Image (tube, rainbow, N blue to C red; front, top):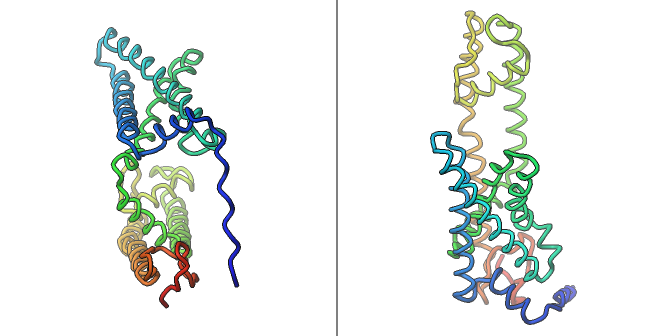
Length: 280
């Protein structure tokens, strides 16, 4: 059966100056584009540092006031950057509703909201999310490829992970309920949700120590919870490890012998780039 031809690309009706702007802001094919992204990243780091330092009470009032003034300079720059991205985008609405578009909007809104609601300027630390663009600037494709491999492994193991999570959830509910019945409010187990919190902390071997059993039976149940926690630690690791091995084997076995393209679908018979027959 012959597959239908791919849909034609969306026509680009942007004038030349908007195409140039889009290539400058969204592309990495020229030194100017890479320099622009690096400048934005430097501004992001500097603005996050300024917002963080402004919250330090030991700094003098004059220094904190200067930091607030500097933050407005960053806000104006990021506002201009957001508007330029809207102008340069091939489909502005699609960019505005994308993950990065929403993050770019959130980086400038808190400053303006602080004029109406004092204190919201500390939400500006959301700009740290824009540092994700560092992977585009330095072209860390190998890390992106490995991240995709982990995603494939988690996707393939999702049923096992869900079953494991449900089993652990059932375990902490049982242990929490038992400790609530045995210890009661006198030992800090004031409710079943609080007791379940203790069970989660205990089974995961975190052990804050803010709540602990006092009776002999309660300590015995806590011991069983601790040993169960150590017993289940290796389970998710083994599930993901098997998934990674299967994903790696699938990638190695689904590489096109003609053009070398990998990462084909498991049921694919032809290469999606050149149409060559796939092995296996």
